[in-house]
Image (cartoon, rainbow, N blue to C red):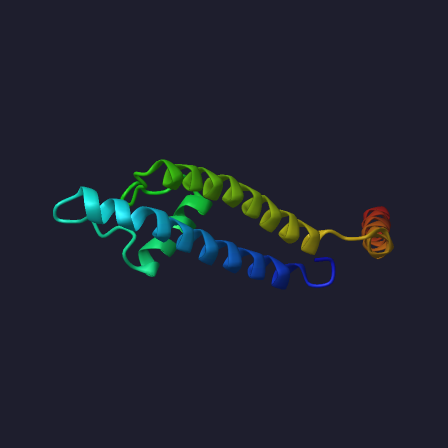
Length: 125
């Protein structure tokens, strides 16, 4: 994670999205096909399951696709919590990219002091 944080993040995100989408398809498809006439096709395709998982991870979801079983609702709760963790990890990685270490801050302070000295000399002249 320390050497390649972006690559590691993308791998973890892809594995979790694929895994959670498959789990939701396993637990939700039989319920929808048995209880509704005509059957609702929310989790029939992997694409709709990916859409549901990504929207739930990134926000509270749109509400156009919902889970109906108890296991599906618990999985949705887990997806939402995991999404909050993944978003905070993403913002941490982005913050680390822009973080300057102590040895890199010294030249910036020197440039600032040089500009201030130049302005002072110009104002005195």
